[in-house]
Image 1 (cartoon, rainbow, N blue to C red):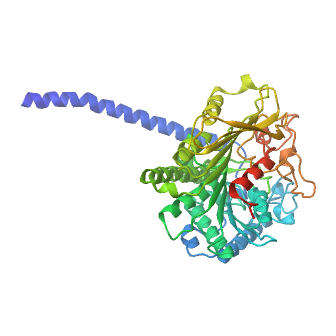
Image 2 (image 1 turned 90 degrees about the vertical axis):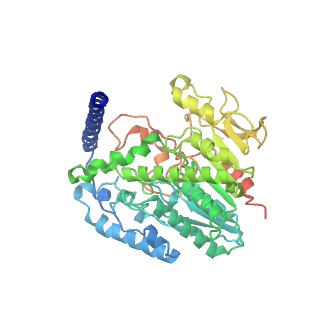
Image 3 (image 1 turned 90 degrees about the horizontal axis):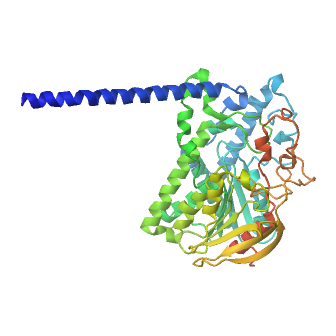
Length: 496
């Protein structure tokens, strides 16, 4: 017996040594990553006032009991506080024409006829047919959906767009906001929409990017909670159903910020704020919250699919660029559409420009993703692929594979890919080419101080305040008219 115990102890010693060695390797690796993150975060520009001043927004616990009037009152206070505590106290170095928080800047939103950072409601001039509630994306503002909102209003719908907590003011607002705050704000917006048109009028939910996740989350909650009004239609633009793997670990990247000298570690990017309606700087917390929201959403979709309740979900129409750096195009198919019932849903995919001569320059990973997203085959939803008529033509066609079919039909659209554009992008879809801020051919009737979509990115390096990669990203949609046509058909906007 004693010999057996001695033998066991002898075996245990190497195992313990091995475990200690593994623990040491893990500890050294973690410390190395921590130190590297500190080093990496300290490079680049310093934090400015808009990275540190956090406006006091309504939180989830307050939004549960709030009314639309309460929301607007707090929104007004937040904007007043930002103007007093930040814009009114800028250092001389910060008073530049490229700083949206400088009141003398041409991109300062307070200088415009209308500040599209704020929540808005469009009332139709004709008899009311329904209500569309719109949710903008992460770091964005209600500006991003104003064209879609106007289209709905022209069709007789009240169009209500809410500014989500942490948005439209200063980037620091996103260092404290949570996805639960956004979800509760979405509930409040729907409640107000219902109050404006009554319980019997159609309800359409419109979501862009992170707002797409919020719109879908609301609709899924309504399947399990009879006290929540179910939507009749759901329209999504570049919806955030899945995000990059890095977002999962974004919270770890921000750990050094727990120590005040390393506060910059709370930011993934610190960029000049020249865009009047969108943040350029991006905090770690925003990435973390987007990951938590998408993970929760995917779990909810799977659960409702297993228990069969997803069969009652409203029809969904999604517009998605096959090339999307921000969200996963594959996740939209694999984690959402493949779970949907046969209910008239459709997925509209905008292909890359196949007539460009960038073939050898397209990464193998991107090419593989494109092929998987647009793979042919019978599905329970209608698939519409907007692509080149041929590999040598800029003319665009729509290839439609109806639900349950594997044979596509084709029609010409009378539209063409701009010769100098090789793909759309995550941010391009809800903006026409005439958008005054993001359009390639901006409307001269509006002036927001800068035309970001019309800047030609050919010139010398070191001249502009931002990197070329930001300006090279396509920011408007040459197929916007087609998109409105599809929305009209799907939502029956002109049926009366």
